[in-house]
Length: 406
Image (cartoon, rainbow, N blue to C red; front, side, top):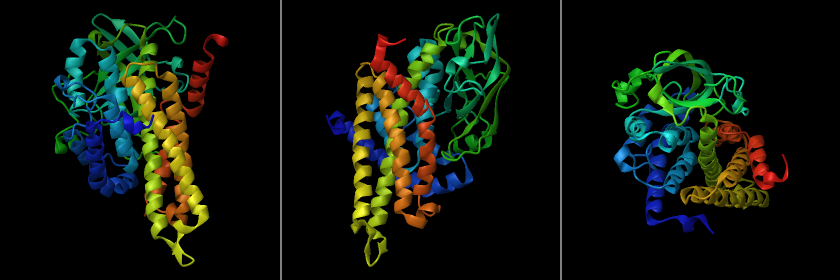
């Protein structure tokens, strides 16, 4: 079944709208934000105005009232032009907002989702720790119940929006005696954005009326290889006071909740990686058809034909994987294996395609004058974030083997 068969007229409208926005607004400034490692507040404000931070959430909670496929289309189209903008929407929506939608009480949804869905403030997800990356059960951050609140101590690393964001879903160990994957609870924690001046200038990113949790802070910004316009920092809890009503879901059930969240996140990251690969192919088609060597366009050489054909074929395969997984999730069917397959294949494809794109651009591909070098740097993290390629292979194999092996 071709992915286009999943699409309605509304899906095509969303795709065209985001494609135009990415080309007209993001493309001119993407290189500058990457070079400066600066968060694109003006573009984020424009994305909020378009409703891109609340695509799959109901209108009564400030969302756009669209479906999950529409959301995946948004990530796919943004990433064709710039992965940092795509991950800003993806991390905010899948990781920051969806756990509250999936596990929150009505009161929690009414309190937090409208702020997130409208892009009034940015959200994030705190799972990874210095000693707990792929081994998420190794969570060391602690949460101790004290009357009407919990006291959190510990830190989360590599957290998207840890600086610029104000609402986070984080995990902490509430039962130190429990085995690794048990005794972990999810919490909603809040803090002020670290970019107050910029947030005030553009009119989004900060909500003064949102009660903040004392003791929650962001550390220095990471200096990264790729996704440089995306805000990534450590999120630190020093005797952080988190109200008891901020417990998300049931106590000691957080591990199962964040596995569910990551399953969905893999489809989003698959769409992002697919977008990077497709953007790289588009750059190659433009470049090779105009660049001349030996008196003719290099696109006319057979070696270039083979490279372009391989990229296009693999992109078509990845498109099927990503949109099939998204369709399964949207229609309420099991999608764990398909999400892992989509993320694994698309992320490794993004690395192959962008490396090939730099090669086809020759020496120019190694300069910042062309976007393929940025795409190559942006592709690498897709094989690491939200579960490494190795973890995806374990997930897929376990789904295949089921109860056949322990």
